[in-house]
Image 1 (tube, one colour):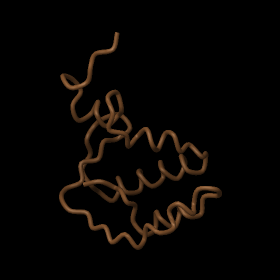
Image 2: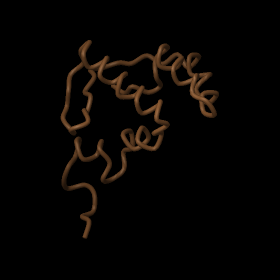
Image 3: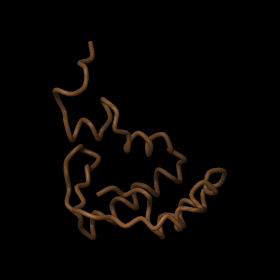
Image 4: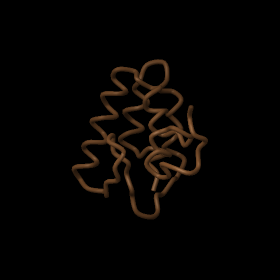
Length: 100
């Protein structure tokens, strides 16, 4: 289950970011509903199941990244290309070409 598009409180936080917040303003109208079971890949590359503590951890981590304008890190955390955190956790070997 993805965390995109973000939910209401996160959209409010994102729209408050100077210079980029306007890009998130229309997301409340998307009408996205998550289905399935959350399988979160934490910052150590391990899977975590959904919990109240995870929600707090995710929001606090994202808040720090947003406050420091570390948008590239946020984008990198959600990439699905070879070598990204997502691909390394889901399919660590056998799909991406080896690096030499």
